[in-house]
Length: 313
Image 1 (cartoon, one colour):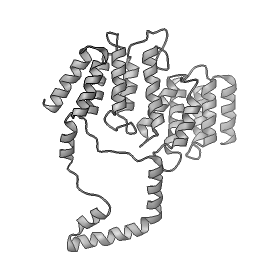
Image 2 (cartoon, one colour):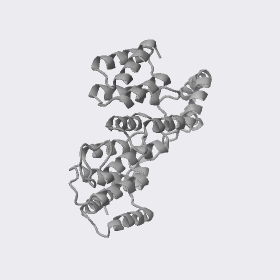
Image 3 (tube, helix red, strand yellow):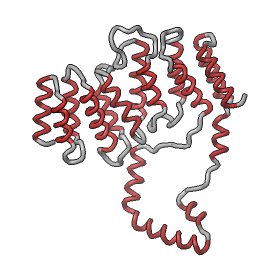
Image 4 (cartoon, one colour):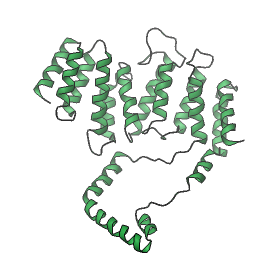
């Protein structure tokens, strides 16, 4: 950390406020070497803890700087390790709660931008949003709002996390996420929910039951192993690939090359068709979820109509 960055950070932490110019100075000092260091990340958190108000400029800087540090600051880039996730939760959590929407936006942005994050970080993000809906308190609430309704901010955050690249099941909801959506639905029936809440409920649960995704992200440990292997083996792999390409032109050995690297042709159309079918197990699960509040409500009806349209049954 440069002396200039340290001075700026100490001054902001002492004052409890930070100006737009000071934030710009922090940007320039922090990214002077192209990266945010662990010490600088701690300093940014220290400033955030002392600020009485979070301006738009500060929130943008906080999310961008710490998001870059956690997602791309260490190898392999794009993966958040277990130790990083544990550090972030410990640093951001205050007796089970977040201080504000700035911290929650950081968590959501990380799940959006990373290729994969540890399960406890995904669970922590969704738990913060669910807690705010059920208690009426938390970073997505402003003022003495009633508990038991889903607001527009919460719908947007839930959508971003559930369908995020590093979510439980990229581009589709997992069973645990679908069960959370049912819990929120049952807790907020007949409440003044955001207009877009029903659509998210239907799309989220529907994607779990009939959605298709072929993407299974690696964890950070496996990604690091593969990256190390590729870095050590790239010259010989390139030479081998060159020989195989020449051989392919002469003898048609492309299938051999693909087989060696596990790149087989997949029948994605068949996989999609199979995923669209609601199995007996899934149907039993769905019936149990619908029976949770002892009635078929308007959300259940919308979900059943969606599934009938998607599956043709």
